[in-house]
Image 1 (tube, rainbow, N blue to C red):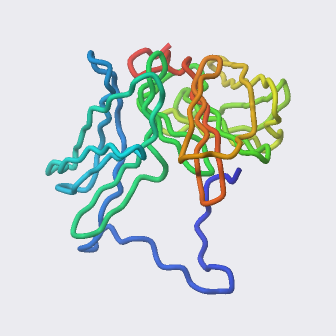
Image 2 (image 1 turned 180 degrees about the vertical axis):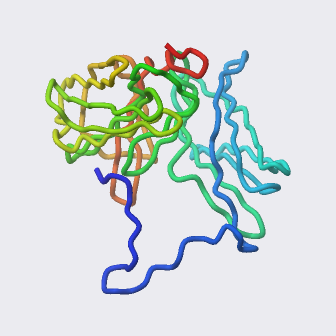
Image 3 (image 1 turned 90 degrees about the vertical axis):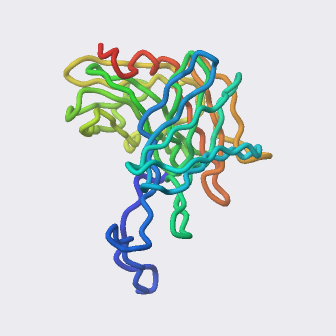
Length: 260
């Protein structure tokens, strides 16, 4: 699995790549961002965030359901999505002045008892929404059929987090200003079978045992199934690529406001 994509000055063969979008340009459309997720009393999940002011924001499921609204003058938007007994993966887009942009990855809404919302990202670790903790918390692990693995979680903002797999050092990462960390398992492959994953910093440690199974062929865009302490989603992260994202129920303990 590739780590964060790198910006290149030139494409293969020396062809210059187009410059990044200019936020001051008249046709610039801000990509939508998910900022919060919460469960409602009737069993739905509220997903809210920001997009370009007055843009048309759509949340679309591959099964055919779709929710749409016009973002406010401040760019705020919100949807209430039925979840049921299985996670759902959905596309999020924003459209304005005839131009449509989409979130990098897919919005995942999950049933209880896990966290309500996360962002699955192709070739990279999942992004947490609304998680906060001082001590390390493991939110998810992503892997592909080649043994590449990426762990995601939260800890004290600005702290150094050490990752080990089956007792062997695999990576060192630093949390961002929101306390999130992404740790590619550079030094150790994530082999098939029962794996013990551990993260620690100066405030404490967390570990979880999870079963790693290389993703197989998919009939649709994604498939979800239960694993011990979480949900595993196998999904198409590219034309020929299948990625597995396991989101652990135990991350629910670190939802905003429960800072242990």
